[in-house]
Image (cartoon, rainbow, N blue to C red; front, side, top):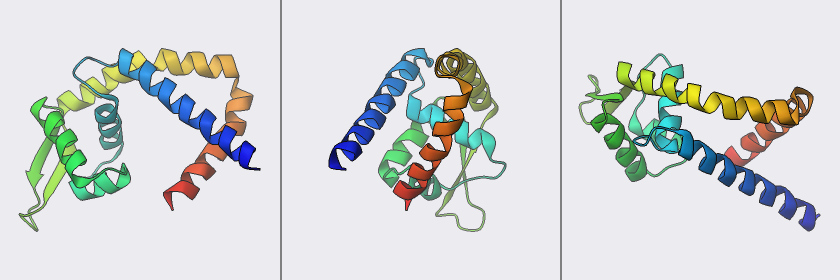
Length: 141
């Protein structure tokens, strides 16, 4: 059983590393994978998010999230505004430039994803996906 668990987590770790390396080489030079992931998330939600919520969601320290948000704001990809109910807090939304760089980045990443799906096959992907979701849920709690 220990060997199975070790092999399982080794494979996941290696796949994660390979995906990160491949995607980082594809993304625009001024956009790190972590920044893209945050833009991708912000593009899918309709309301503002607080930095503390984003840090918890992405499993980052508040300092790391502040650093990422600062870089995205400097690039013009997000807007950081005061929370009108509590001026000590901030609200984060994706900007039009952030939406555009996200869309452009998705177009660059899509062929890589498509190649993986075509090589592995849809049937196998559909088998693995629920397992990966279960694993994420277990590890999240």
